[in-house]
Image 1 (spheres, rainbow, N blue to C red):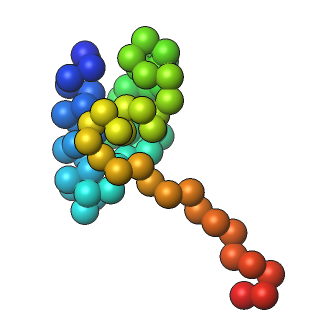
Image 2: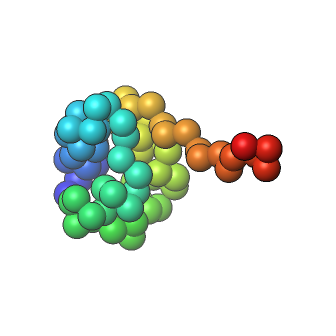
Length: 68
């Protein structure tokens, strides 16, 4: 897959997931492309690929406080 095809696949997966960008592991599961296929030739960070696809990056999960 070339860069344009990867970006199209990212947008397709996001569209099927209510606009949420796929993580790199989910992307690999759905497309068969591994990190070695895009890193560092195309992007250094997965977030850079997500941004280039025009998607909003996912937020990090935060552990609940001990009071909860």
